Image 1 (tube, rainbow, N blue to C red):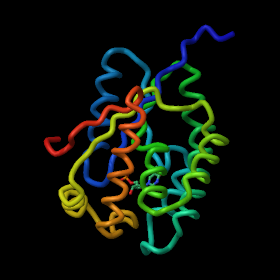
Image 2: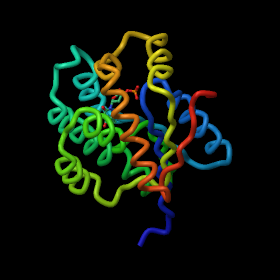
Image 3: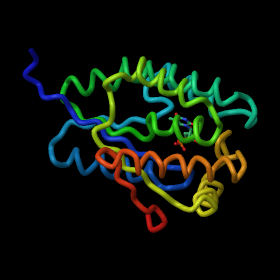
Image 4: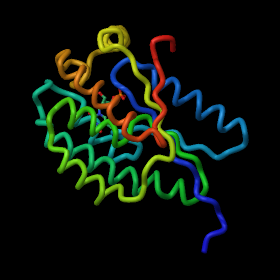
Length: 193
Ligand code: TMP
């Protein structure tokens, strides 16, 4: 039996333009300053293979992939990320701060795109299994305000360029997850961040 205490797994979630990447970085810095070993990562991505899948998933026209194909890409990336980075880091006692994780698949591909919940739940159970976040900080902002921030930042990726209805559905998807799992999720208004 290992004497090393497993690290904690913290995720940041939210729609476009919530400022969650900045908040994830700030939290990782605060945790490191207390002496903890902290691994900062993101999804899709976080390992070389998953970063290659990220480029496939995010670039190109909005209709390049169907929501089902996107779900499979996200879980291919997630499997690699879990195997090569997240699980080893947690076992060594590091805390992992991840910018997006499986709630994004439920919100973007499921609530936003209409991919079947059954498919997402099946992949989640088989691929992530017991590796669930200990804490999820969910940043929420009005869709139009978030998109305005995202537009000002850089060229739009596939998801940012989807229509307003898609972004409204995914926001509702995140809010529903936060309501249904209050022991894991903390919902934070992001308009002042
Ligand atoms: P970000 O760097 O702005 O967070 O970009 C990642 C994009 O990928 C974002 O638009 C959300 C999308 N995404 C999904 O659609 N499904 C997923 O499972 C994940 C992790 C991200």
